[in-house]
Structure formats: structure tokens, C-alpha cells
Image (cartoon, rainbow, N blue to C red):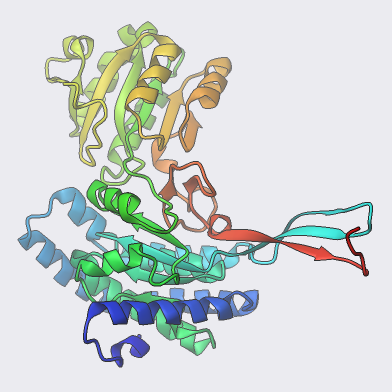
Length: 428
């Protein structure tokens, strides 16, 4: 980070443009860095995070104290907090990335033309990734690891509440880059919490940034999607559903519903709505609702759900499209798979949906018809995660339709070019 710290900062704009130039130069160098060197740097990053856990936790405590003083809620504080276990998970994520195949240079497809030309489609890095995030300091390591392995430079802009933790992590990661002969500017954290820095990134830093990835609340993502002059990988909300179909095994449904809602309530893959088939309501509705309430979850339900348990609060029209990010769930009885799919289409955010059923035909119809980035059968929505998909880690979840959809991992951080080999051919 010294290249930035040493530069006079008369205003934010020249500082940001300077970071962009450094990142573009670093990306050019990284694009042809060897897999062995990148992997060695990733292993060193993991080891340094573990060795400096106490320093990271100390900075994190300062961030948490500041967030509490600002009145941040429990879900926000959970996303912000780091402990030994979460730091170990960050380190494991970096090692998992190192163990993955390097996408750069992979031949996606190749063919020969009748005139003798040999054509290949080859993976190449996107270039410079702009990462804007709020309360998750672990994103610093995930983003840095994924961008490094995929040959991209990254400019990180953390939220004010996670700034101290993110700065310590970024400095540790940068040390590993230097030690392994990789460009220091491959990982840069914007050294200010001034909100105007976001605007400069969204404008592209004079053409330096190739894609923006926001990780944070609805207001941040909405701003990025509305103002960005460069492509964006993002999802606005995670309004995820679990549909318990008529043939669902009750014990399995209970385990999946509780995990999908309550394992971690503040993540985008947490279930926000439970749909129960009317054909299973007499056997499944009361026990599933009761299990949620007894586990500490507030249930807001339609009239039939309220009749099943007097502790259920009435759901309003605002509950069905709501992303609670808290121990609250909306429950509705639906009239079969058709009604469930229609409800998800109307109120969902095209993020993650799950069906619990023993009926293979119903499962396949659900998986085919639900238009979300991730669809599951007999599994918790909390598997909506790049690490759980075997990607090592993810830089975010995208619900758009172009280039990347679902977890954004190594392959999604590459594009491709065509390599054509000839032997003197000219076009008539």
C-alpha cells in the first residue's frame, strides 16, 4: 500500500485515478504470471492471515465498537465480526483457491477450418475488478484471492464500519504479493471512507476498471446498478424460498427449513419465505411452524398458517417480497407446484430457491421452471455459496443474465479471446 500512502493526496479524484493506473499496470503483469507463483502467493497469504489473527481481531473489535455506537443491528454486527474460526475459514478459502485449476490460458474449445486455420477460444483475465463492500471484512481476502488466481488486479473499497479490519487484512495480503515477486498494486484498498470514492469507481477511473462487484445492502447495490458506467456483477436482494411439496419427508423438511432460515440469518442465501403445499398442510404445516418458533424464529403467515399456530403473526403484502436478514420468516400455504412457482416468480429476487420433495417428477419440473440463479432439490438454500460449490470462494452472487450468474468464482472472472494459427492463409 506504500505506493498510495506516499503519494500527495490533494483531493480524492487524483488519488483514485492514480490507483486505477497502478491497477491497470498490475493487471497487465498478472495476466501472464505463472500458476506456480500465484499459488505460492496464495499459500503465503493464508499463512500470514493465521499468523496475524490477533492483529486482525484487535482491529475488528474497534470496528465493531464503532458500528455499535452507530446503532447497527445484530445482523450487521454478525456480518462484520471476525474471530479465530472465521479467520481460519478465510485462510482455508485462499488455500482452496490455490488448489483449483488456473483458468487463465485454458482452451475452452478449438476447431480447424477447411482452409487450414486452427482456431481456439482461450480464457483470459477480465483485467481490473472494482470491489465495493460494506460490513464483511472477509470479502477482502476472498476478493483478493480470486482476482489474483484469475490474473486480475482488484481495487477494494470497504465500508466505513469495516475499514480498519479490511486495511489490516489488505496490508497482510500485499506483503505476500511482494515476497513472491508479484505487483504490489494487484491488491489495493481505497485508503479513505469518503463516499465520493465510490462515485469515481462507478465512473470507471478513466477506463481502468473493467467490472464492478458490490457486496452490501440494498441501497448500495441499487446505487451501483443505477450509476455504474462499467458492467456490474450483483444481486439486489436475496428473497429465497423453500417450497415443501406434498410428498416431502417431514423430518428432512424440518432440518432443511431450520437450516435454510436460521443457520445464518444475515446472509443472502438465508430463506425468507416458506411455501407449504396445501396437500401436505395437515401433516407438515403445524410441526414446521412450531419448530421455527421454538428455535427462536418469528413467523408471519397467511390465515391458514395463523390457524395452525396461535403464535403466528399475520403476514401483510409487504412480507412476501421482504428480505428480512433476521430470524423472521413468512409462511404461506400454496395450491400445488403451479402456485408455488407463480409465487416465486412474483415475489422472488431470482437468487436461490429450494424444493423439498420425494417426487422426482415434481422436483425436475420445479428445477426447470423456476427462473433463479440457483435452484436446489432437497437441500438448504444456505448452500448458495461459491465455496460450497467447490469454487474455493466467491466474489459475490450475480442474478443477471449476462456473463456471470450465481456464484462468481474464478471462471466468471475471466473472459476469452480467439487465437488463430495459420500457415500463410489470405482471404480471397
